[in-house]
Length: 296
Ligand SMILES: Nc1nc2c(ncn2[C@@H]2O[C@H](COP(=O)(O)OP(=O)(O)O)[C@@H](O)[C@H]2O)c(=O)[nH]1
Ligand SMILES: [Mg+2]
Image 1 (cartoon, protein in one colour):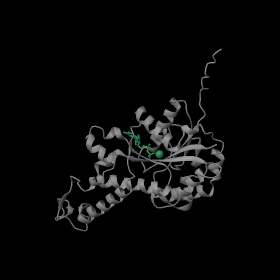
Image 2: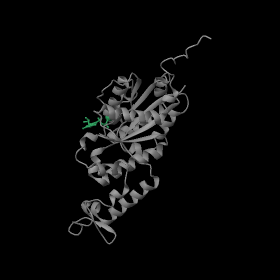
Image 3: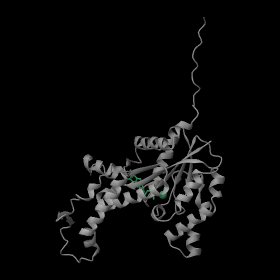
Image 4: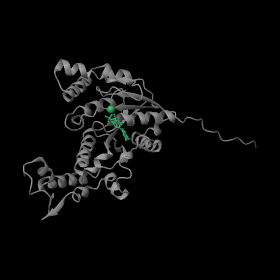
Protein backbone atom coordinates (compact mmCIF):
# COMPACT_ATOMS: atom_id res chain seq x y z
CA UNK A 1 0.00 0.00 0.00
CA UNK A 2 1.35 3.41 -0.83
CA UNK A 3 0.65 6.79 0.70
CA UNK A 4 0.22 10.15 -0.98
CA UNK A 5 1.56 13.56 -0.07
CA UNK A 6 2.31 17.08 -1.19
CA UNK A 7 5.11 19.19 0.22
CA UNK A 8 4.24 22.90 0.06
CA UNK A 9 7.40 24.95 -0.31
CA UNK A 10 8.53 28.47 -1.18
CA UNK A 11 9.88 31.68 0.32
CA UNK A 12 8.56 33.26 3.52
CA UNK A 13 5.18 34.92 3.10
CA UNK A 14 4.50 33.27 -0.28
CA UNK A 15 1.17 31.99 1.05
CA UNK A 16 2.11 28.38 1.85
CA UNK A 17 0.03 28.03 5.03
CA UNK A 18 -2.91 29.82 3.40
CA UNK A 19 -2.68 27.44 0.42
CA UNK A 20 -2.46 24.39 2.72
CA UNK A 21 -5.58 25.60 4.56
CA UNK A 22 -7.51 26.27 1.34
CA UNK A 23 -6.44 22.92 -0.08
CA UNK A 24 -7.57 21.04 3.07
CA UNK A 25 -10.86 22.94 3.06
CA UNK A 26 -11.33 21.84 -0.55
CA UNK A 27 -10.47 18.22 0.32
CA UNK A 28 -12.94 18.37 3.17
CA UNK A 29 -15.65 19.84 0.86
CA UNK A 30 -15.08 17.01 -1.59
CA UNK A 31 -15.20 14.42 1.23
CA UNK A 32 -11.56 13.51 1.07
CA UNK A 33 -9.33 12.76 4.03
CA UNK A 34 -6.08 14.51 4.81
CA UNK A 35 -3.30 14.66 7.37
CA UNK A 36 -1.76 18.05 8.09
CA UNK A 37 1.94 17.99 8.94
CA UNK A 38 3.46 21.27 10.06
CA UNK A 39 7.22 21.33 9.55
CA UNK A 40 7.68 25.05 10.23
CA UNK A 41 8.98 25.29 13.81
CA UNK A 42 8.22 29.04 13.83
CA UNK A 43 4.56 28.74 12.75
CA UNK A 44 1.98 29.69 15.36
CA UNK A 45 -1.31 30.17 13.54
CA UNK A 46 -3.07 27.54 11.51
CA UNK A 47 -6.39 27.27 9.72
CA UNK A 48 -6.53 23.58 10.67
CA UNK A 49 -4.92 22.12 13.77
CA UNK A 50 -1.83 20.14 12.63
CA UNK A 51 -2.04 16.35 13.12
CA UNK A 52 1.74 16.24 13.27
CA UNK A 53 3.77 19.26 14.38
CA UNK A 54 7.58 19.60 14.35
CA UNK A 55 7.19 21.80 17.45
CA UNK A 56 6.35 18.64 19.41
CA UNK A 57 9.83 17.40 18.54
CA UNK A 58 11.91 20.58 18.72
CA UNK A 59 11.24 24.18 19.65
CA UNK A 60 12.85 26.92 17.53
CA UNK A 61 12.68 29.29 20.47
CA UNK A 62 14.63 26.90 22.74
CA UNK A 63 17.16 26.19 19.99
CA UNK A 64 17.80 29.90 19.39
CA UNK A 65 18.19 30.55 23.08
CA UNK A 66 20.33 27.52 23.99
CA UNK A 67 22.51 27.49 20.89
CA UNK A 68 22.67 31.28 20.61
CA UNK A 69 21.47 31.13 16.99
CA UNK A 70 19.39 33.52 14.87
CA UNK A 71 16.12 32.42 13.23
CA UNK A 72 17.77 31.04 10.07
CA UNK A 73 20.55 29.14 11.84
CA UNK A 74 17.96 27.94 14.37
CA UNK A 75 15.73 26.61 11.59
CA UNK A 76 18.60 24.70 9.99
CA UNK A 77 19.46 23.23 13.42
CA UNK A 78 15.80 22.15 13.88
CA UNK A 79 15.84 20.37 10.51
CA UNK A 80 19.17 18.69 11.25
CA UNK A 81 17.58 17.50 14.51
CA UNK A 82 14.55 16.24 12.59
CA UNK A 83 16.86 14.27 10.26
CA UNK A 84 18.42 12.60 13.31
CA UNK A 85 14.96 11.76 14.59
CA UNK A 86 13.10 10.70 11.47
CA UNK A 87 11.23 8.09 13.52
CA UNK A 88 9.17 11.02 14.77
CA UNK A 89 7.60 11.26 11.29
CA UNK A 90 7.65 7.52 10.58
CA UNK A 91 5.75 6.68 13.77
CA UNK A 92 3.07 9.27 13.12
CA UNK A 93 2.60 8.58 9.40
CA UNK A 94 3.12 4.82 9.19
CA UNK A 95 -0.54 3.94 9.55
CA UNK A 96 -1.96 6.60 7.20
CA UNK A 97 -4.18 5.02 4.53
CA UNK A 98 -3.85 5.45 0.78
CA UNK A 99 -7.07 7.45 0.59
CA UNK A 100 -5.45 10.28 2.59
CA UNK A 101 -3.49 13.23 1.22
CA UNK A 102 -0.63 14.13 3.55
CA UNK A 103 -0.06 17.90 3.39
CA UNK A 104 3.40 19.06 4.51
CA UNK A 105 3.53 22.79 5.36
CA UNK A 106 7.16 23.90 5.09
CA UNK A 107 9.11 26.89 6.46
CA UNK A 108 10.18 29.74 4.15
CA UNK A 109 13.92 29.99 4.76
CA UNK A 110 15.32 30.05 1.26
CA UNK A 111 18.58 28.29 2.16
CA UNK A 112 16.50 25.17 2.76
CA UNK A 113 15.59 25.10 -0.94
CA UNK A 114 18.88 26.17 -2.42
CA UNK A 115 22.13 25.25 -0.75
CA UNK A 116 21.77 22.89 2.22
CA UNK A 117 21.22 19.22 1.39
CA UNK A 118 18.57 18.69 4.08
CA UNK A 119 15.39 18.38 2.01
CA UNK A 120 16.74 15.66 -0.33
CA UNK A 121 17.42 13.47 2.73
CA UNK A 122 14.00 14.22 4.20
CA UNK A 123 12.10 13.56 0.96
CA UNK A 124 14.06 10.35 0.34
CA UNK A 125 13.04 9.13 3.80
CA UNK A 126 9.39 9.95 3.12
CA UNK A 127 9.39 8.29 -0.30
CA UNK A 128 11.40 5.18 0.47
CA UNK A 129 11.32 2.51 3.15
CA UNK A 130 8.29 1.92 5.31
CA UNK A 131 6.53 5.21 4.52
CA UNK A 132 6.63 4.82 0.73
CA UNK A 133 4.86 8.16 0.10
CA UNK A 134 4.20 9.17 -3.49
CA UNK A 135 5.28 12.76 -2.98
CA UNK A 136 4.98 15.90 -5.05
CA UNK A 137 6.51 19.32 -4.42
CA UNK A 138 4.32 22.42 -4.76
CA UNK A 139 6.57 25.49 -4.96
CA UNK A 140 4.85 28.82 -4.38
CA UNK A 141 6.08 32.17 -5.60
CA UNK A 142 3.94 35.23 -5.04
CA UNK A 143 2.53 36.93 -8.11
CA UNK A 144 3.49 40.43 -6.96
CA UNK A 145 7.10 39.48 -7.86
CA UNK A 146 6.24 40.00 -11.52
CA UNK A 147 6.38 43.77 -10.97
CA UNK A 148 10.16 43.36 -10.64
CA UNK A 149 11.44 41.04 -13.36
CA UNK A 150 14.86 40.38 -11.83
CA UNK A 151 13.17 39.45 -8.56
CA UNK A 152 10.74 37.19 -10.40
CA UNK A 153 13.61 35.38 -12.12
CA UNK A 154 15.51 35.05 -8.84
CA UNK A 155 12.40 33.37 -7.42
CA UNK A 156 12.11 31.20 -10.53
CA UNK A 157 15.72 30.10 -10.02
CA UNK A 158 15.01 29.09 -6.42
CA UNK A 159 12.01 27.06 -7.64
CA UNK A 160 14.22 25.42 -10.23
CA UNK A 161 16.93 24.76 -7.67
CA UNK A 162 14.41 22.94 -5.44
CA UNK A 163 13.12 20.99 -8.44
CA UNK A 164 16.58 19.80 -9.49
CA UNK A 165 17.72 19.14 -5.92
CA UNK A 166 14.71 16.98 -4.99
CA UNK A 167 14.05 15.19 -8.26
CA UNK A 168 10.39 14.53 -7.41
CA UNK A 169 7.24 15.58 -9.32
CA UNK A 170 7.12 19.35 -9.05
CA UNK A 171 4.35 21.91 -9.50
CA UNK A 172 5.17 25.63 -9.59
CA UNK A 173 2.43 27.92 -8.37
CA UNK A 174 2.05 31.68 -8.71
CA UNK A 175 0.16 32.60 -5.53
CA UNK A 176 -1.91 35.68 -4.60
CA UNK A 177 -3.13 36.14 -8.18
CA UNK A 178 -5.93 38.33 -6.80
CA UNK A 179 -3.29 40.99 -6.07
CA UNK A 180 -2.20 41.34 -9.69
CA UNK A 181 -5.48 40.77 -11.51
CA UNK A 182 -6.42 43.94 -13.34
CA UNK A 183 -2.92 45.39 -13.00
CA UNK A 184 -1.21 43.25 -15.65
CA UNK A 185 -2.47 42.70 -19.20
CA UNK A 186 -3.38 39.10 -19.95
CA UNK A 187 -0.83 38.75 -22.74
CA UNK A 188 1.88 40.14 -20.47
CA UNK A 189 0.84 37.76 -17.66
CA UNK A 190 1.14 34.81 -20.02
CA UNK A 191 4.84 35.59 -20.39
CA UNK A 192 5.28 34.95 -16.66
CA UNK A 193 3.06 31.86 -16.51
CA UNK A 194 4.91 30.11 -19.34
CA UNK A 195 8.16 31.72 -18.35
CA UNK A 196 9.47 33.79 -21.28
CA UNK A 197 13.13 34.42 -20.54
CA UNK A 198 13.24 37.32 -23.00
CA UNK A 199 11.33 39.28 -20.37
CA UNK A 200 14.69 40.13 -18.85
CA UNK A 201 16.07 41.42 -22.12
CA UNK A 202 13.19 43.75 -22.92
CA UNK A 203 12.64 45.19 -19.45
CA UNK A 204 10.94 48.59 -20.06
CA UNK A 205 12.89 50.13 -17.16
CA UNK A 206 16.14 49.61 -19.14
CA UNK A 207 17.39 50.73 -22.56
CA UNK A 208 19.99 49.01 -24.68
CA UNK A 209 23.06 50.41 -26.42
CA UNK A 210 25.85 48.57 -28.20
CA UNK A 211 24.36 45.19 -27.36
CA UNK A 212 24.28 45.89 -23.63
CA UNK A 213 21.53 47.21 -21.42
CA UNK A 214 21.90 50.43 -19.46
CA UNK A 215 19.61 52.22 -17.10
CA UNK A 216 18.96 55.90 -17.80
CA UNK A 217 20.96 57.02 -14.80
CA UNK A 218 23.94 54.75 -15.44
CA UNK A 219 26.50 57.52 -15.83
CA UNK A 220 25.40 59.82 -13.05
CA UNK A 221 25.47 57.29 -10.21
CA UNK A 222 28.47 55.90 -8.34
CA UNK A 223 29.47 52.94 -10.55
CA UNK A 224 30.12 50.80 -7.46
CA UNK A 225 26.80 51.71 -5.83
CA UNK A 226 24.10 49.04 -5.50
CA UNK A 227 21.73 51.04 -7.75
CA UNK A 228 24.28 51.22 -10.55
CA UNK A 229 25.20 47.56 -10.26
CA UNK A 230 21.55 46.48 -10.41
CA UNK A 231 20.97 48.72 -13.45
CA UNK A 232 24.34 48.22 -15.18
CA UNK A 233 25.59 46.16 -18.10
CA UNK A 234 27.03 43.35 -15.97
CA UNK A 235 23.70 42.85 -14.25
CA UNK A 236 21.97 42.76 -17.62
CA UNK A 237 24.48 40.16 -18.83
CA UNK A 238 23.97 38.12 -15.67
CA UNK A 239 20.21 38.27 -16.19
CA UNK A 240 20.67 37.18 -19.80
CA UNK A 241 22.75 34.19 -18.65
CA UNK A 242 20.12 33.29 -16.04
CA UNK A 243 17.44 33.50 -18.75
CA UNK A 244 19.45 31.17 -21.00
CA UNK A 245 19.85 28.71 -18.11
CA UNK A 246 16.09 28.63 -17.47
CA UNK A 247 15.51 28.28 -21.24
CA UNK A 248 17.95 25.39 -21.45
CA UNK A 249 15.99 23.45 -18.88
CA UNK A 250 12.68 24.70 -20.30
CA UNK A 251 11.01 23.30 -17.22
CA UNK A 252 9.49 26.31 -15.57
CA UNK A 253 5.85 27.21 -15.88
CA UNK A 254 3.34 28.24 -13.22
CA UNK A 255 -0.19 27.37 -12.20
CA UNK A 256 -2.21 30.36 -10.99
CA UNK A 257 -3.54 30.38 -7.44
CA UNK A 258 -6.14 32.58 -5.82
CA UNK A 259 -6.59 31.08 -2.36
CA UNK A 260 -10.11 32.53 -2.08
CA UNK A 261 -11.27 30.88 -5.29
CA UNK A 262 -12.48 27.28 -4.91
CA UNK A 263 -12.11 26.58 -8.67
CA UNK A 264 -8.50 27.74 -8.60
CA UNK A 265 -7.76 25.45 -5.63
CA UNK A 266 -9.67 22.55 -7.21
CA UNK A 267 -7.65 22.87 -10.43
CA UNK A 268 -4.36 22.80 -8.54
CA UNK A 269 -5.43 19.81 -6.40
CA UNK A 270 -6.29 17.90 -9.63
CA UNK A 271 -2.87 18.73 -10.97
CA UNK A 272 -1.23 17.45 -7.77
CA UNK A 273 -3.41 14.30 -7.82
CA UNK A 274 -2.19 13.58 -11.36
CA UNK A 275 1.44 14.21 -10.43
CA UNK A 276 1.31 11.65 -7.58
CA UNK A 277 -1.13 9.33 -9.40
CA UNK A 278 -3.54 9.49 -6.49
CA UNK A 279 -6.66 8.35 -8.30
CA UNK A 280 -5.01 5.34 -9.92
CA UNK A 281 -4.50 3.83 -6.46
CA UNK A 282 -8.00 4.35 -5.10
CA UNK A 283 -10.56 1.60 -4.71
CA UNK A 284 -13.73 2.49 -6.56
CA UNK A 285 -16.06 4.11 -4.01
CA UNK A 286 -19.35 2.87 -5.37
CA UNK A 287 -19.81 -0.78 -6.21
CA UNK A 288 -20.02 -1.15 -9.98
CA UNK A 289 -23.50 -1.80 -11.27
CA UNK A 290 -23.87 -5.40 -12.30
CA UNK A 291 -25.01 -6.24 -15.77
CA UNK A 292 -28.68 -7.21 -15.58
CA UNK A 293 -29.17 -10.90 -16.13
CA UNK A 294 -31.55 -11.86 -18.86
CA UNK A 295 -33.70 -14.90 -18.70
CA UNK A 296 -33.57 -17.08 -21.75
N1 LIG B 1 -4.28 38.77 -1.20
C1 LIG B 1 -3.86 37.56 -0.85
N2 LIG B 1 -3.12 37.41 0.27
C2 LIG B 1 -2.70 36.18 0.60
C3 LIG B 1 -3.00 35.03 -0.21
N3 LIG B 1 -2.41 33.95 0.36
C4 LIG B 1 -1.79 34.39 1.46
N4 LIG B 1 -1.95 35.73 1.64
C5 LIG B 1 -1.42 36.57 2.74
O1 LIG B 1 0.00 36.51 2.73
C6 LIG B 1 0.51 36.49 4.05
C7 LIG B 1 1.41 35.28 4.25
O2 LIG B 1 0.64 34.12 4.12
P1 LIG B 1 1.08 32.72 4.75
O3 LIG B 1 0.10 31.71 4.23
O4 LIG B 1 1.26 32.81 6.22
O5 LIG B 1 2.50 32.53 4.06
P2 LIG B 1 3.68 31.48 4.36
O6 LIG B 1 4.72 32.19 5.15
O7 LIG B 1 4.20 31.11 2.99
O8 LIG B 1 3.06 30.31 5.07
C8 LIG B 1 -0.70 36.47 4.98
O9 LIG B 1 -0.91 37.80 5.42
C9 LIG B 1 -1.82 36.00 4.08
O10 LIG B 1 -3.07 36.51 4.48
C10 LIG B 1 -3.79 35.23 -1.41
O11 LIG B 1 -4.10 34.30 -2.20
N5 LIG B 1 -4.17 36.52 -1.67
MG1 LIG C 1 3.55 29.29 6.83
